[in-house]
Length: 321
Image 1 (cartoon, rainbow, N blue to C red):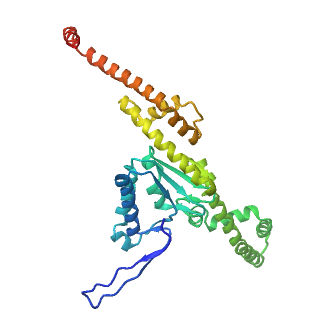
Image 2 (image 1 turned 30 degrees about the vertical axis):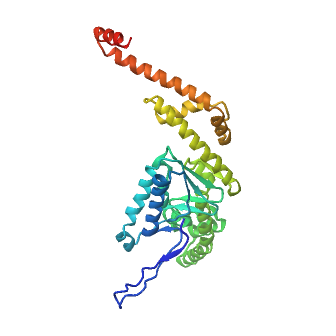
Image 3 (image 1 turned 60 degrees about the vertical axis):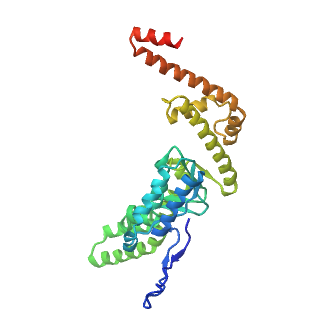
């Protein structure tokens, strides 16, 4: 992920009036050049290197200024989606400690782009969501809503509201209204801070897992070990799944996964156990796949024979003998 920096178009040697132009770029934001760099890197890993991919996602979104739009930032963002959509190897998106994934940045790395290959994980100290807490509060919990909550919870405001209702003259009512306004101004920063904290609770890893947008919550200390075994498992499963689908052309991706789980004589929830089972049961798995291939071919031949007339079938069987 990008942190901070800037683009520096050099001066044109043939133009004495030109000069170097330093364009500052904010951190954690995709600009046209960095988005294009990300898209080409994904494509190179997929087609050239044929490697699994892990993305340490720490982006707040895309830069959407007029100059960025002119520089085709949307096209390069779409290139990232295209690269992930056609990726043929395991892809892991990991939100690192104190990292965050927001806005359009989440959209272009969401696992639903390629659910057969992509998985997303979040560190327990990471944050994720379309809008940041201040943005959520601007939309969902504005000043008027905060004031309404104050009057519902604060005893002093409740007492002042009651006094206002019982006020007998305009002068007393004006004075009470001023006290209410002063109390509201005093409480507003506190309620805003609480609102931001409440909104932030919805962006944390536990909530992401509860909503099903990440596979699991990880700790940085154990993440290296986890991704090692997870990658080994995904690669081993991918190899067996391809053999199964080649043996039976009618078998779907989910059917092949269910078949592997059915054959697995181990703890399916443990990546290490599944890898060790696949590596230790290669002969058994190959025999099962060979049997499936025989049954698939037998069904196909029977279907073809059933489509022939009796004389054609007898003639073909005679020639085969």
